[in-house]
Image (cartoon, rainbow, N blue to C red):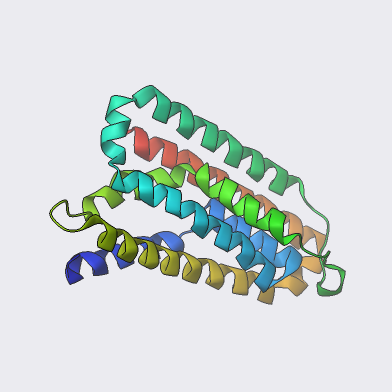
Length: 206
């Protein structure tokens, strides 16, 4: 992979990781409830799920989508419905949270939820299905490119999620106010749902 292509890949996924979306909202809300470290367990789940998306991109997701359009449409709709459900449940949460009243985190459940959310995330189709295949050079060894891509995407994803998890953890004392909790959860739910719906629209064009 050429240096210019690698730098472009970093910018692409760094901007994606810093853009509020379903994964960001999951990690931020988990950080409020459990703290920074447990929230990043969910972030690790997101990163593990990205491995499947990278494999799909390397195998030629655009070509598969053109051959089986109904299957990909069904997957996108199912993923969007799952994220809309998560957004709905988040919007309904209004109980105040304090640092001293945080319940012990279930790290296994957080990890699994991160995997499930990212595998069903329509936003991933924008980056992995629509954009990432163009960064693979068919004339160069695939395994070396896969190693570089996976390392780059994992680092940029976790960096972006860590920023949001840290910010949410720093604001955790504000969540003792029920009105603030409701505004935050509804805003996060709107961003999560809007991000999923935009991904459906973006991947249906052309």
